[in-house]
Image (cartoon, rainbow, N blue to C red; front, side, top):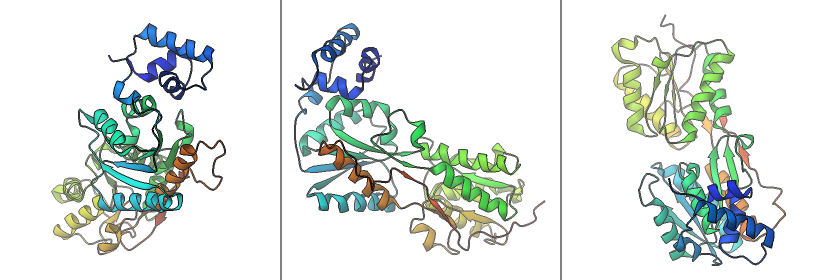
Length: 346
């Protein structure tokens, strides 16, 4: 296996940032630290990326927003949030869509950063969750902020992260359905590559456990964050005249929930009299359906604006953090017409 900058940092007992500073020959590194890191480099026969090293020391008045997400509403909200802060700071914004599964992902990153001479990056999921990408950025020595699903205490280095507590939000949505009498609650999941998917499933499972409702694998459909997946998921869960007696479906996001609602309509199922449906994120999809979707409000423009603020404290080299920066966001329940009392399907 290829030796990474993370391997060097672990052997030397320092941070990846320190290894990057040593490799890029920054003058502020103490000789003792330099020797320890270089000994680890030699022992592991670590070969730094030459293209990445050539980027060291570049300065710019532009930052990048990198994403791999098919949801246009999500991308626009993220873009607007980062852009609002860029305008205040006098920076330009470079928007870069890409696919995390591409074999040449790291080379594409280096080329993009070099071409645009970026001062820093805001990374959105699932790119922000890929350790290989993080290692590469640490090797380059560029500043970045990661948007992550989860909680700060679960992440080893949370100083450059903005968290979304999908677990808590999913727990609240599921509790809402349980309070309405629902016990057979289907769940159409999003993409398994996104940590938000596992976090939302975990919140759902915990809420069931907290209220002594049995968890049933047959009520889970592994899909993706798309309208089409919501249609297929609902059709699968409700097939054979709803033999699982499902009275509610939790969609992995609002697109999924809208698809589930569409499928239910085709099956002549009344919403919410016979079936309650909830979404997640409070995107325009949740307000364009009929009935409108109960969901969890996730202010993506505000989240990304705080990510940009955190990034600029790093690019300015300031040791003091902006005290107004919020680093953990919890989506809040929004109750609309798509949920109601459970139908008696027993």
